[in-house]
Length: 370
Image: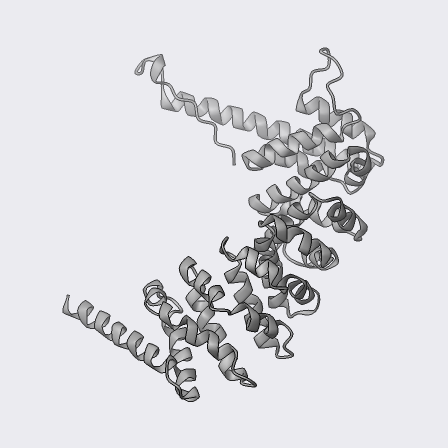
């Protein structure tokens, strides 16, 4: 108990010392204070709360003329203060940090540019900050970072843009900056199961709600294909965004986009998603399969609107033995998976309850979709 008390006391002394240093008029002491704040807030949520009062002084350091060391130290301290702390995120923006941070996006110092991009990523996670960041002029600069930045800055940039895209007014600003060539390039080169792919597809899903976005994606060589590749091998969340984007395109103008999706081989990924995706993904995949067949409406009561009939109809419209064969193989695998799930379900029921030791009313049925 005494050891814990001593540790808390030492922590309190460190916090008070860091606050004294950052509020000093001496630039060398302020720099030392910023570095100490960065260290203290790296892993401690409590220190982030206790050092919230340093935000104003750190933001003032960002404005010091021709002092790269001060800029980097203050920016890193602010970045740590903002992580997992909504109050600090808002406080940093209210203190006027956006203006100098945006200036750093122009910097020839790649490290400072990276830190500025990372800061906007963190600050844009706050719903309260999204309108201010969008109105600050940062979006075209983030797109430029996505085009010319370091590998890490590009990743942080697309994640920041994805965050900002959830505020509707920002979508038109993002579209005006023409980001699709750089989003598609990043999506092509990143691992399809990565968080980067997820954020790229989330951003694409938001942007293809606009005709300009749909045109931009289909105009990029390999644009639609890169989304389909995520549909096939991305994370569950990535695949949900990917199928959402493709469904939005097809629903907006089926006659315009149906052939493009079929040509790029969308069917196998959709078939797999109807069995192995999230509930939303499964529903969207089935809806998209209906739209992709020759007629989007059930043809007769004699040929019911089952998934198998929808798929067989689509397969008959696909040119090329390779795609048709792949789709038929995937359909067979779907049926196999469905049969295996049904068998497991029956086996589970047999284990959970038997007529000899439990009344029928106690039997439970649980199907686990993996």
